[in-house]
Image (tube, rainbow over all chains, first blue to last red; front, side, top):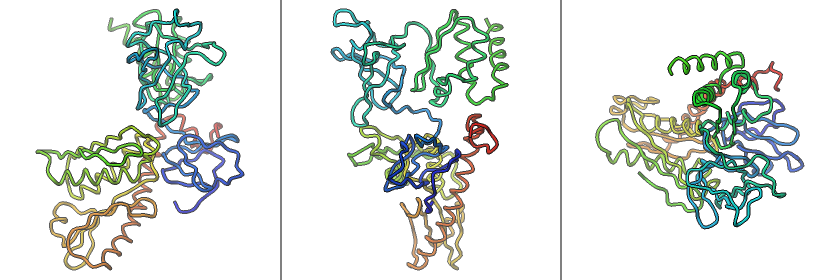
Length: 236
Length: 183
């Protein structure tokens, strides 16, 4: 595309290489999928170009996670190096999690992180040249839900599904809430969802549902869940 | 496999396998072509100390294999959300003895041609070429110019294909629908 247009006000589909004008006086933050070069912003991924009055970015579903600071992810402990743990977050490199970065933990009293344990942590450093770092506490020492996840079942899904699930008003979880009395979902931004419920059958139903609900319109979600529950109950 | 030699960014490894038989030197040539195009187009500096592994499996060869590989490669990279400088597209052409140009030649047309051209375009540039046979500079420039138009049509097709893929998702259907409230 040779012409350089203004950033469109409504969401538009763009391809790699499409360029939009981005004068230096603009106060928009350039988000994922875009590159700033000489007063223009170039698309590096195909997707939908979206803009608010604060930022502009490319909305796109993908499966490969790239760590970003402040994102909450579910990691699998892969090893220990002294006090730190190497955690697999699904990115190109392992992330480092300090063994004491948990609420109320001290050198003598810290969680026992075995290889294979699941941790819900926040990315605190994510430079492309260095391994990313995780933590389960914020600056005030509070965990706010970040912790080691005991039991349960971990599934992989696309990054887009995780973003949808993390929205407070998502229709995707409404059928689950209506149908199951006791369950817990922890959604990591790295394409992983941890499911914990009161029975194995329920966990199975929820994981099958999450695997298939992503592209369905709202009215088909409850029938999907009912179909899955019927099949799981009848196959026992 | 063929591995790149740059050190400031991701490494691109390319593997090309034919439908049948062992690897031939032709597969090695395709691997080198794929690697060079990927290195040119992928933003490798965004992902240092990593590698992009590109694996091409040729299932069926009906002619113009390298151009098919390149176009499929572009679609695959787009589908995988790999950060790229721009789209790229390959155009293959065979010139017969009387000077007529046959675009996207079949295996028979390739065998019967006097010379063949393959150009990979990205944006305004031509980033990779592979030409065989005897031709003049004028003929070369003519094919290069006409090929760019074919590439532009190819990119319009990629756009349509990608839009279909995006619209499988309800969220993007609503975002791109001019009447929806999300906009």
